[in-house]
Image (cartoon, rainbow, N blue to C red; front, side, top):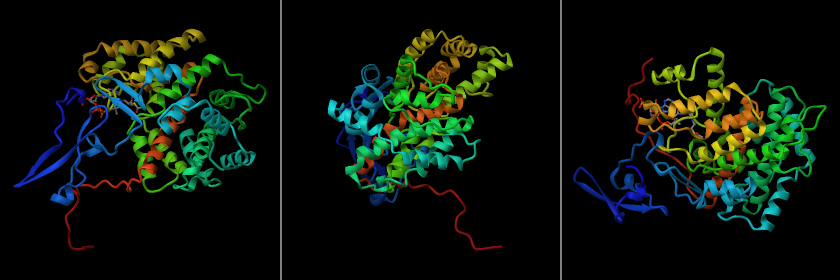
Amino acid sequence: MSDSAQLPAAPSSAKLQIGDKTLDLAVVVGSEGEHSVDVSKLRDATGYITLDEGYRNTGAVKSGITFIDGEQGILRYRGYDIAEVAQNATFIETAQLLFHGDLPTAEAHAHFTKLLSKHDEQTFEDIVAAMSGLPATSHPMATLSAMINLTSGRYSDSGFNNKAEFEEDAARLMGKVIILAAAAYRTSAGLPILAPKAGYSYCENFLYMLFSTPTKAHVPDPDVVDALDKIFILHADHEQNCSTSTVRMVGSSGASMSASCAAGVCALWGPLHGGANAEVLERLEYIHQSGMTPAQFLERVKNKQEKLYGFGHAVYKNFDPRSRVLKKAADKVLAKLHVNDPLLDIAKQLEDAALNEDYFKSRNLYPNVDFYSGIIMRALGIPTNMFTVLFAIGRMPGWIAQWKEVRDSKSKIYRPRQVYVGPAHRAWKK
Ligand code: ACO
């Protein structure tokens, strides 16, 4: 079934017949007209469970944070279209919108911004000490996840029920994540770790900590800061994707905000999810170095010898609305920075050719957010092994908001069932 808005009005219940037994199942309709059948009592009533491998047809939660219509290419944060959020809000305002459901007042925004830049020296010393014990060859995603866990011990956010501390915990985690992300890169590049600089905004500080050298403090370019802010906004939440479901699953056990989000970093790392942005660039480099034409590479994709990373999406069967905004931002940044990069020409040719190829058209494969974010990040000078880390920084507010929703809904621990298909009971035999 495609667009749920085209469905006829929902009945109040659906009937399920199993053998000679008929069961009335409640129909639940979402605020954007999504129809679902509540099967939560199915096992108690019939002994049956539902089977939906990979949860692709399962509404695991009721959530009020983000709405996606994959057929129409719609993405909204708390009711606001993503393009409007990206045009009008900052990343920090977006984070507060996701946490609390409404745009922040000027006072609430000033308060949270102040908390974000409150770094105590002991935390920074802890980070430097803990990082020195990690192998320099660690992937920055491994370092980020490990360090979020390692540095959470000093704080109260281990308290799942400590609601009064939410703002402090969220600000501390978001504020610390840019320090850890920059530190992960600097360690992998053999550079000393830098502390944030007072007076710089969130994105300015990240760029400062990432790019400063021992002899020259980096002064962030306002256009680059703006592009980074947009990248973060566009990544800030995406309802029940793999990493967010992971965060919610971990949080449902009563685990802290930090522990749940550290798990989200690991889930995001995979190449089918957030890791795709780095894969895009690696494939472009491969095409460039091998001397292959984009058309020859696409032949390999059509023959299933390759995957075109940055194309396709589990939910969007149309243009990813984030990629529309990012494409415009990419064009602007590339023009402004006068970037002359053969990989970007290859990306453009690949995109044009793929959008006209029957293989992609017939499978509804369009560029997703990772295609353009990889291109912009390259233009901004971000090292490829940091691409997915930047995704994690951007997704942090969404993970925090989703963790908070689990906590506030007093949900039971998440516990899917299975259909066991292993050996039936057998007698012990050596
Ligand atoms: N390149 C080539 N073929 C593809 C691609 C791709 N990027 N994506 C899907 N296909 C093909 C599949 O091989 C399959 O072909 P078939 O019908 O001949 O068997 C068909 O399209 C359907 O693909 P599925 O894998 O069933 O689609 P699904 O919805 O499960 O996968 C996914 C979605 C994982 C994103 C997939 O499109 C993919 O692997 N893309 C590349 C990785 C990527 O860019 N991931 C980032 C997604 S956005 C994000 O997580 C932030």
